[in-house]
Image (cartoon, rainbow, N blue to C red; front, side, top):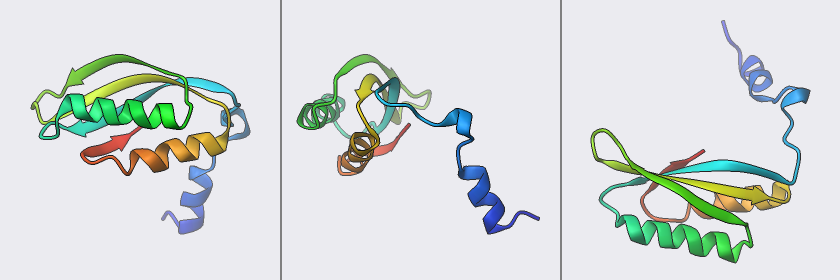
Length: 100
C-alpha cells in the first residue's frame, strides 16, 4: 500500500536529478485545436519575450485525432524563479492543456 508520505518521497528528485541553472531544454506546450494556432503561438511568444526568456520555436505538430496542436520550443532558463514564472504565465493563456 502506498502512503501519502511514500508518494511525496517518490516525487522528490534524486540528488543526481537536481536541475542546474542556467538550463536549456525543449518545452512542449499542448493547445486545444479549437483555439487559433497562430494566436496561441503569438501569445506564447509575447509571454517569453516579456519574461526575457531566450527561445526558439522548433516545431508544431497536430495530434492524431486533430484535436490538439503541440508546440516544441527550446528555452533557456536562468534560475528556478524564472522557471516558476514561465509555468505560472503559461497557465494564464487560454486553450493551453498542459506544458512539459
